[in-house]
Image (cartoon, rainbow, N blue to C red; front, top):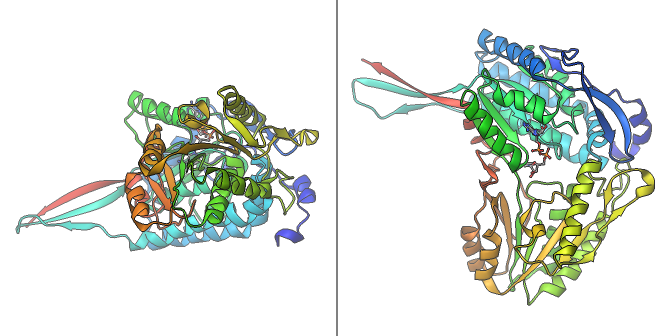
Length: 495
Ligand code: NAD
């Protein structure tokens, strides 16, 4: 149980995987290069991890291709693939303690979140797609009487899953579940900040009975290993989650190489719209605080812009500030901590830079606004709320990816919607209102892939997740995600 474990003692003893996992085993990298993995909770070195280069990526691709063409996985009976993926999911849960610890050490998130949230949701995702495998049917098209025409789905081949560091296990599982279930071989490239759990997944997949080469894991730097995957002529698809900037690179890589399929889950600047007719400001305040301070605000759909009717502005801000106190930064390995450290010194400095920019542009911090717990050597920022923000300020337009809320006062419904949609992003948005009519009007007006009404950040594997506009295209989760990793084949039988 979470509370019964001495996490600090376990942290000293846990083995840290640090070599590529290819063809069913850990191997030495060809590059011979490494990168440092730092525990952001205290700024100290954990270990050096192999930094894969283009030659390493090529070894992983060749292994994945061998596995795919042999048919050991791609042509395995769906019910058998299902059994192996279910076992994989069970093994993730069986290794919950270790995986949660590895995640917290890599990214500084509270151990309670990693243990109760990340591990469990990754396992659930793999199981959901395992269960779907033998329940998805093809089609028989309505063609001429002397024809029978089937529309079938086939795996693409080699899928590269390039993922970020904010929810390393879940983001990997959102790709692995549908890509593996549909029979592809996958090469997983974790972010350089968070390679441990991805490597462990490679090991657990083999233990579950997945044939070698079906899941290879290449730790490495984005502009080296990630780029090599993007440009590789034998990678058929990239499932990418990360920043919009790097998403644009992947579109270029595709055009410069083999027109590989690309799915992009990118950044966001999600609006939290609170209308004057909101009839539960306490619920709104709780949802808004959790929506920006959970996971230290390092969340793609973080509700980072509070667009609030001026009539309720002061009252709401007070309530949000009260809720924010729950998220005082604490030791990530303490089970009571609700907000841990930022992922890295670089990310902390980036967020502090945005806080400076907010002040310089004339916005006023009503809560927080600085680095804390410096004596630990770790990278902690306190929950921060700016008031007096205009939507053209940098802190209202750019993705900060930190615990910083920008409050923008507006007058009435139409202005609220106009400001909410005045962004290059379109990942998610929320509206808080007591009016059924305004709830429906807002749900239709907000240009985003996900809209929450009187709630925030609710999710289910049964529901697709992804963005409009520069937040990307393609969807993770739900049966729709399987479309990204398959091609349609039409087969005509003349009678
Ligand atoms: P990032 O774009 O810097 O990195 C993501 C991945 O891309 C990492 O594995 C990285 O190594 C790799 N990469 C970096 N540069 C590359 C390059 N030049 N070529 C190829 N690969 C490269 O993002 P991050 O900092 O790890 O994560 C934060 C971003 O992810 C935020 O923008 C956030 O909104 C986004 N995100 C989106 C979702 C979603 O579902 N929409 C979910 C989580 C995070």
